[in-house]
Length: 406
Image 1 (spheres, helix red, strand yellow):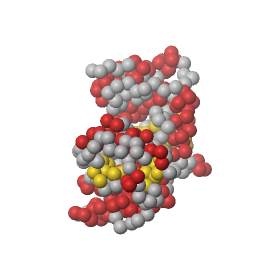
Image 2 (cartoon, one colour):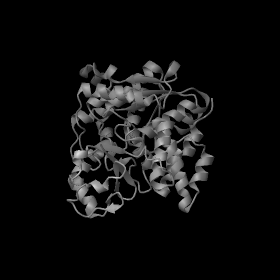
Image 3 (cartoon, helix red, strand yellow):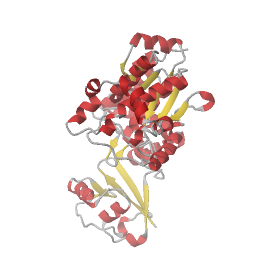
Image 4 (cartoon, one colour):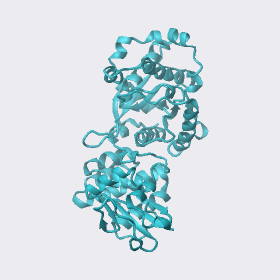
């Protein structure tokens, strides 16, 4: 059994952990069953989940057994961690639909064949719990005073924390206990914002079952300024190609700040650390070569090599010496839209979310039609703007869309 601990430390995954020496020895000498929880609050995972999947994949490659826990039960409540307001309440039907979509995505990163990993739903044991029995059996092990010191609750107390959400820690702790009893799960992994919840589950097992249990958090994906990465003008950077196209996904990583290249290569690819360090040491314009490698490797993991290659070719067609425009983000309009206001067309094709946003872009000098900077809100699409059946829209310095006129 090869220890994965050193590799995880070197790549910058591990942020906090309990019982450091015990965990190091355990990962070196035994096959550990561990879990990471994912609440199905949307029908796709996003980049924030991707780092957790990579954490899980590194552990599996080293011979350990992952449990991917989908929160069909906990999503009915919503995790207050890192939130200033209460989450939107989802119906059971919405949650079930989200779970089905997320299961497909996870299989790209985790090998679920022949018992190498498990995928379970905590709704199987949480939704039929007797509340009084649960309080007597589990709630008795939790101190309210201690819970109120948890960071996930402290930041919500000023704005109001519902009793519904206050139960979340008990439920997540119970998840760890159930997985321990059913599958011999001894370790929970997760984002660093889950530390308080993870400690609660570990302590519940140690008190209630008198068994060893451990927790280890991974660093959150933030940029050099400490802000979460993965936010775009359209919202989250999704792993679903219908929500974030492979080209948009590729371009996000192609355009990261120079200072974030090493962290992203370390956490979001399987490149050897020797290669990561070589690429990250490039300076000046050469760092762009490292960004191209980063964008291709991450897009390949999420969308497959074929889509990554298409995104790379589209990017080179716009910014390099390439000429294949086939994979540039493309929309289609009817020929009857010739003569219509350009802003209306951009809203219809969802290139800009609203006319107000389009006007803001124009005011800032950030919108171009072909090579012409647009300065007039009422600018219309004219027949002479259409070259070989299409025209190009540019937003800012690096965001291009091709619109075909049929």
